[in-house]
Image (cartoon, rainbow, N blue to C red; front, side, top):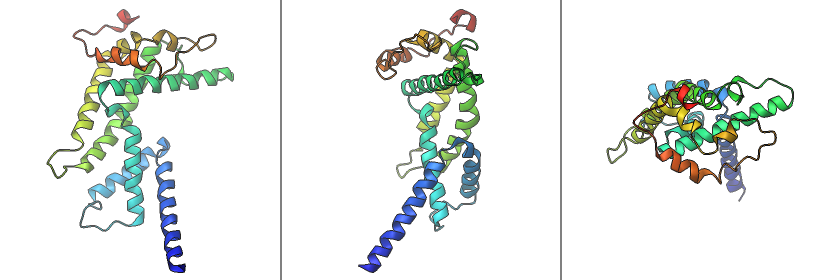
Length: 223
């Protein structure tokens, strides 16, 4: 019984260490650190069947897997990716509202009144996805490689991502500006009865299904 208890304690310590590492790995301030460590390990062939992983390498791989899941929202099918983009934008704008309620200047990407809210949102999304998400997911999908069936497991993810980025770059401002609920997003929260994000998902989903269209409005036409 004593030996079994010690084994269980050791397993619990390993489990706890792994969970802490994974959670801390979702901190975007550590994004490039973990990406560089993962790239070095992958290119050094430390994630192969010929190499016995140590605890540190296991934790790194688990951390990267969770971080990839946390950053892969825009690599989902179009309607889900655009809904994530919409909700992320609203979250950022609410942070800006909170800053201003405390007599602080709203951060540039969080100020819904700085310029057209749709333009602010799309500029922020396109920049962060191209600079942070796309390079990281490319590394991750290269690691995933080919499954036993010969299907490239990362292909769907990257294909979705590239199509969604192109859609945002070409039509994102119009998609947001013509979306149900945009009038609410585009104004300050004081005195505004905001529609519940989850409750209005059905309306937005039907709107998102319409894209891409054959012709894209200019920013001037959208506003």
